[in-house]
Amino acid sequence: MHRRRVQAVSLQAKLRAVRIPPVDPTKPRRIRSALVEPFARSEAGRWWLINVAPKLDRAIFRLSGGRFTSIPARILFLTHMGARSGEKRENPLTYFTDGEDLIVMASNYGRERHPAWYYNVKANPEVEVRAAGRRGRFRAQVTSGEDRERLWRLAKQLTSVYADYEKRAAERQIQVVRLTPVEGDRS
Image 1 (cartoon, one colour):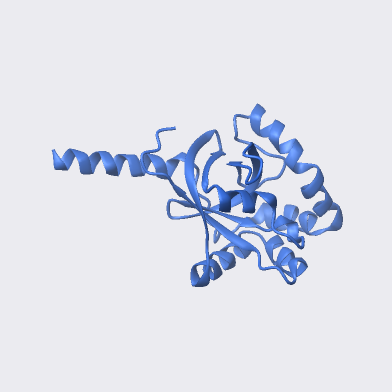
Image 2 (cartoon, one colour):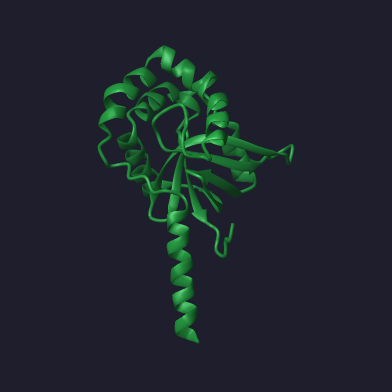
């Protein structure tokens, strides 16, 4: 009996690990580095990312079953509850993985303030994530100390745009949020 339980738990962990596709931030990305990042780092690219891509990505993501977005990057859709309104909100975010956990940055494109979703997940850490046609339930936790520093270095390896955001944010430390799979998730 105990052996079956261990096998079932192991299988659940494996299924959960493949639910949202892994993203290695240290893997070289030639196309992104050569074509996408120079555009994203420009003023026109920043404007596109802030004003057009989030709206366009919702439609592309929905029509493609969660497999494509307007930029060649791994994007997840974070569904969370508004801290004050209690209404469901959804935000497209770039992510990478750290083991089974998903890592997202509260960069807000390097603006002075944290994005609204950051305050929402601090108040209501139970979230849902959709990516590449898959979904799962997660618990959000703001990282700190050495863990935050290590993950932030990895984020800047994933895309140099985060280094630009860090400079723009100046006085604000960009927060790194860890999304951990919820045990027993069968979604």
